[in-house]
Length: 584
Image 1 (cartoon, one colour):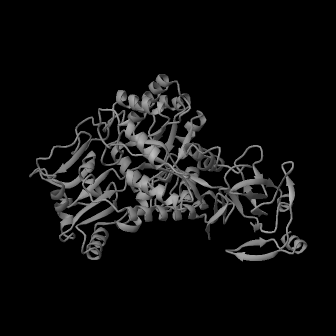
Image 2: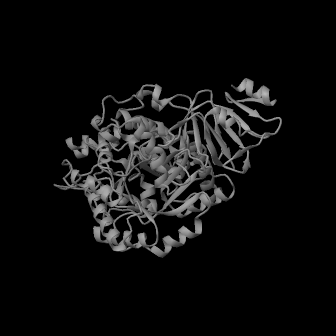
Image 3: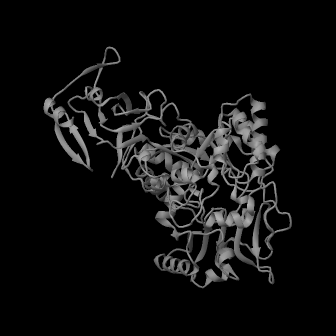
């Protein structure tokens, strides 16, 4: 097809990354949509293009003009839209999709960690952490602090370290050291770090957190659980504006590499908002970004500062940055720290009282007040709800807010809703509330083992997505990177949704395999449903005439391979608004 076509029009052929690009040598204009004489900027043809649109689910080719899909259909029809300067890309039978959307991530924090922090793998042993810390101390002679992580949630269950604080002291020299765990909800500090922030034997445990102490002396042993970590993190030195902007550019590069063209930052602090806007205004943000404005972390009995949130929304919105979102944390995590709010008690443990059911940050009445006011101001709220008790409280608060405002259109999200009481599953559809799930973790792994050790047998029944979909619940998926996962790679999450097995092949078995879903369902969640979460469903999320030309080209057809091979998928090309922003 391309040979006869290029000969007939006298086109010039160029090879780029294994894909054929064709440039017109003479003009050709055809009528499109009545009398509108237009030609395409780009035509991608000879592919297996899955549109995610029910009326035209698969096509061979698409034409792009001014960053939008101009037309789609058969190869020979799209080629008629070629003009003198049209770029034609032969997909050579490859599979293509709309760009993917990561609906829950901390991508700038992840890039900061990659670029500037003291980093080690979740699976790191004490010996490996000691080596990493020693190297970081040597490489940062002028710095007072070494900040990084992330250690496994069960690290101190698996390794006999009497004093985590003193253990770090052996390798930290004169530096203050603070490491986050894999969930991002707990911290580990050395003696100097505790001294610099004033955490002593006399410091009371904050409401909603725990300073773990030496049983004989009462001195902090270096572990700071849930809200106790905020005592440390609020005093840590911050990164510079230049570092934040470098991190945004790095996360954009990584996202585009994996085929992501839309992302929701689940907890965008002020400097992150500022960096998004700056990078967008510089023309370097090849992503649709939804920024969930950060709110105070931890136990709270007073309403939020709504005027401040509204000011940040208006101050930092830009072409590709939507700031009509807010993040509220309502509990912790159901790992060894036992900070997720549960309906039934955790397994007994020496560090926790009998019948312990976790921690609820914001009570139902306060949360309902927040949601009511935020709804009136047009915000979508992402609520961290890792336990089934916090899920119920959030659903109750959403119901009260909807009735108070009369608005059911704003789709509030319950993040990490892994444990849901069966009675609450139908309420997601009734309230138009989104189950914001973490499929990258839907398989046996060290962090899941930490959950099982804390929750017990019922911990095996984690993330009931099949039941949610059967009930008609809106569903969203996100990486939560850098928490608990090593990268933004969405193909890890997609494989785990379909198999419920470890895509890395490190841990045998399956996690509640009865809740596995189909590839069709998984791809729709990462495209169409993700776009809805970004409030960009009329612009992106599917391939349709008039939508932004956000599209990815894969190295394999996902429908022609074993589900266990999905995680190995490589994105060969990513287009954002019609521009090639990643080329393999």
